[in-house]
Image (cartoon, rainbow, N blue to C red; front, side, top):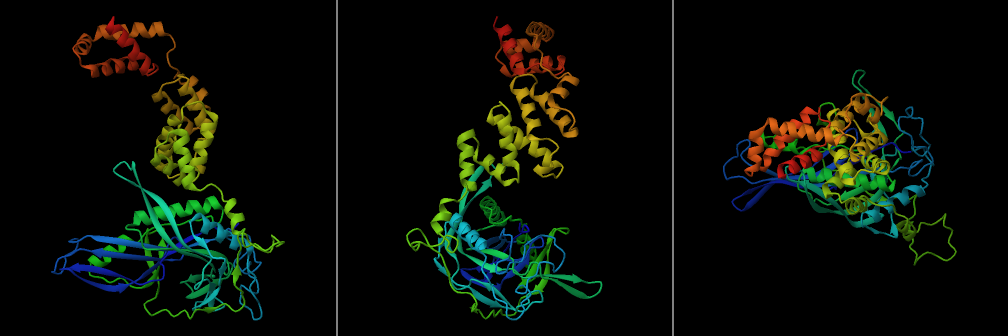
Length: 519
């Protein structure tokens, strides 16, 4: 399988930081390229401040971001885009390099069918128009890890154009309001990756690893329709989920940059046109190389590749060999369920709130965990949702664990929720059991309940006598209740629960108390 990678950046256009002053607009041209978490790319991002005619002081104005992204997603394929070399993450340096990858004279590209199908699938999932005829181009630039001196891409006529990506942004203090937004997709194109430069500062040398050279990439170009880093991150996360659902890319990524540019401008600095890398240790971007000079990539048609021709059901030649052609409609009919459809099903099937469906999908592995719990317990779906999203996910985040690293399995949580549903234990006791399960994998929920004597009282006669004693011991609270202070009953419930060491069901206690008060 291909190494997980999602790289993001700019749509290749210039933009400006503009100041609005008395109705006139002034700006300084800039574009910033940067790399995130070891993944190269660019971002088109404009910050627009509203200021007075006087020179602004630090913090005097607010900056509004306008964000467009160019995302490079590594295609999940066993071999590279134009050669038969294997794609394998963390292989020994220069162990997966064909003659073509090393750009030896006389070698020719052979297009990988899997990569083309992945591009068509992604285009269809993003509502793009698939071009039945697309072209390959050479993009020339010099860098040590690009042995040919050019990159094969699709600049003039890409494989897919004019699409859209719909995503939801959660708003409000408790993130309970979901606003649906849409970003336009300008185009999706196939291109080959470059190699990797390993800089050895100690020896003042750079080593080149060409294992990555020629790996297939999907370049997804988004229009600058987003207004903040949160929107951009949410859109990228939605794209990541789509690529993973399709199986076209494993898609990993990170997000940062707007605040750095705001700080730079407010301190009197200037935004440089440069490639920046994200340092996960420092939590910020750092400069890699200057790109202030005008870039002339000298695009030209790729002479060694003919036009890429695709077909649909209507245009497919009679008797065509399915191994030699790609049918767009055949791929469309076999698209898997996309994240938006999955969320709709969760809301409809389980009565789930929209924001809960987003959380289940956004946390890697959480949806599968939830569904496995649902299969193994008779507890209500709303109860399962609450426990998975509040208790279980809360514990994971406290300890910075992924779902796959959880010490509690779906079966263990399902057993616990079944005990709770059958009123064997109370809600507070269930939380105690959960904490014990988190600490120890060797015990089941039932064993913990038995050892700690957490079962609810089943002797109703004894519970009624205890309630009577509590009422007699607190006549003032009883008097308040009879005068209409209905909240006073919570005091009595708490006293009964304390007396039973929290082994009595609050609902049952309340029912007994109300019956005694009305008699």
